[in-house]
Length: 243
Ligand SMILES: Nc1ncnc2c1ncn2[C@@H]1O[C@H](COP(=O)(O)OP(=O)(O)OP(=O)(O)O)[C@@H](O)[C@H]1O
Ligand SMILES: [Mg+2]
Image (cartoon, rainbow, N blue to C red):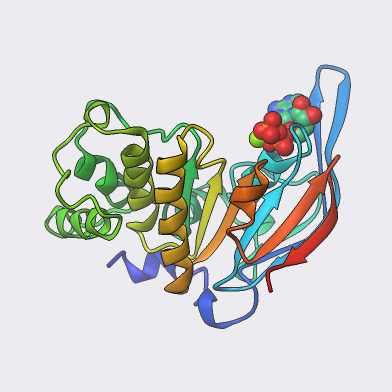
């Protein structure tokens, strides 16, 4: 397991209160003298174990939300509590730890290292977390088995299909046992078969209690979640909970 002391500044989230709490969240981008308000006051609470999709047209602010939730960027105003901790109070080192250990990222472009085998890609977050090498391989293999790729451990990304590469990326997102899985258009580069593979995997992760935020502009992908949050022009315009 990851070093408990490293994680201790973020309490045991899964049992107390929401994983995500955004209040009055605003984000203004500045490009030279031009300002653009990408988020214009977002309130959003997501509890442990929820599977939420954020949907909206291009430019509506979805990736901006993802970057905020993933502690890759900060709000201009408003607050973001991650597992009860105000992200604004964390220093760079703590933020890096949160990104590494508390959040599992899945991106449209997979972001796998082409020269490394599947299991080496999956163990990387554990390398950064300082997990001993003896433990890393076992955990990477278990994560790959979890996504149905136990027979592809030594394949490099170029030897895998798009769907398989994305499953490697999901295994990498899971290997640290994060509090939150954040996926930005995870099926955006996949054909319908591979999309189904990845969404089936998310269903399973949800069934086993993971908290998932999936960002997409496709309605049929969003419909697989349990709650759809619709974003338009930097505001939440509707929410729909699955029956
Ligand atoms: N770094 C930046 N600097 C300036 N403007 C930005 C920056 N990032 C995003 N924006 C603007 O903020 C708005 C929201 O962008 P965002 O990437 O969040 O949209 P999105 O909903 O993810 O769109 P897409 O579906 O195309 O990925 C857009 O108008 C975009 O041009
Ligand atoms: Mg985007």
